[in-house]
Length: 416
Image 1 (cartoon, rainbow, N blue to C red):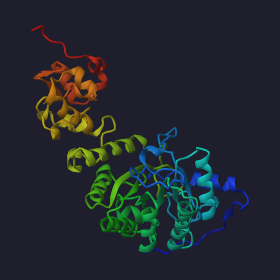
Image 2: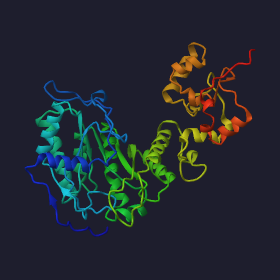
Image 3: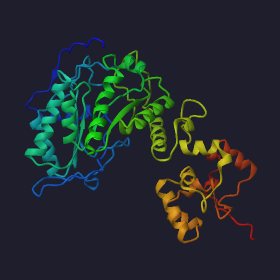
Image 4: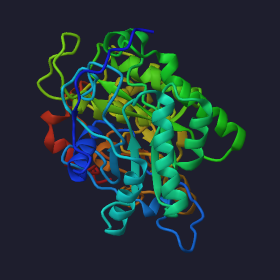
């Protein structure tokens, strides 16, 4: 492993200025995307605070669409690593702050009582040593759980390099844990995070998987990868995610558009974060997890997802031989591959056609997005849209925007 950089002069926020410390640590945590609700349940003590059930977690969104429903802070932004993409890298001259475990617990409870938050997302820079950092974070959660009897949602970031015992303790205390891998290849890590290795970053996830299998208690962890900071293609990113899912190392992969916060020759010069690319990766990831797609299905042409079309529609346009699909007889696996039909509406279609006749109006009520689906389905042998040869050619070349009237024109019968 590469030699760690020494910590330069610290710009420390005074301990008596709690508001400034909290502001610094909240700003330092805003680049981490990998937080979500637990979807789980925990028995709530009659004299306790909060509820970990999904409905007890309130989600709000910032202007750029990121979830900010939790009190999302770092324990400290003091870090021994020098990752070139990170605002908190050891060589940056930025204000540094730290909250004690007692302060974290008190702030969380006070914010909860004021109805500001419904849970806590706690991460940290590597302070002194991974075990020291992990132990301090665990102490904060213990105070919340045992002294304040806080039963609300807690997401705890695992520190790579921490001992198995500490990771297991964190796993048992929190509703969700995560460990950011950041990049899918060793080459990218060596370029931007020379002090880290892929095996070291994956180790906490492997430990969580082992504990999960032993105890069968909670879902596996999540992770985050950065989009656009390295030359890694969309196919590389999604192939990596597919491998993590197949090995059951994570329940979900989060994609974070690279935001330039540092100047370094190893970093790309971007005018703005690749948010649309991030969005397409989320859509493709959804197809991998719930629609039965593989990375080979999504990347039959090139290494990148098209930005002008969602991945599912792009796949459908590449396979005109599979369409239209007859919704009254098609199996579930074919239905959910139709643009505009998802797992929920697909199951509703299967149930509805057992008891009655399907029609365009019925499909709308079942949740089918007909604005997209009508070009790829038939109902009792009849298409919902009749396309001219020129319109069909435009559709096959993905130029739907040239025919706005086509998107709204319903099927008109010939009068028969």
